[in-house]
Structure formats: C-alpha cells, structure tokens
Length: 78
Image (tube, rainbow, N blue to C red; front, top):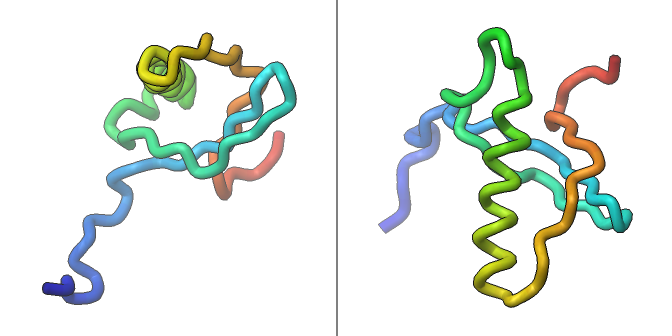
C-alpha cells in the first residue's frame, strides 16, 4: 500500500557528495542529521561515510577508497 504524500519526516538525513582519491564520485550519500552540527560541523559525516565504505569493502572484497573531498548537497561553496 502506498504512503500518503508528506508522511516522510523531513530533515532526518543530510546528503553529501563524496569524491575519492582515484577521482570517482558518489552522490547523495545519506548521513543521519543528528550526527551533524555543533562544534564539529560536518566532520562527523566523514567518519560515518568511512565506516559505511569499510563495511561495503569488506563485503565486496576490495580495499576501501580514501576520501578526497566531502561536500554537503545544496550547501553554498566557501
């Protein structure tokens, strides 16, 4: 059965574009919004995504890639 429009909570996740050292990019990686903010800003997102990448690498049998840059989707460039 389909959900009614507008029943999904907004602001539950923040989305990030990740660029890896080898030049590959992954778009719209989800990070729980509760991890972000405060004094650390978006830095907890890097460790969260690195943990996700480590789990994916273990399952695929490939080494995890090093993150070159991490940008929040929709944020203004500094």
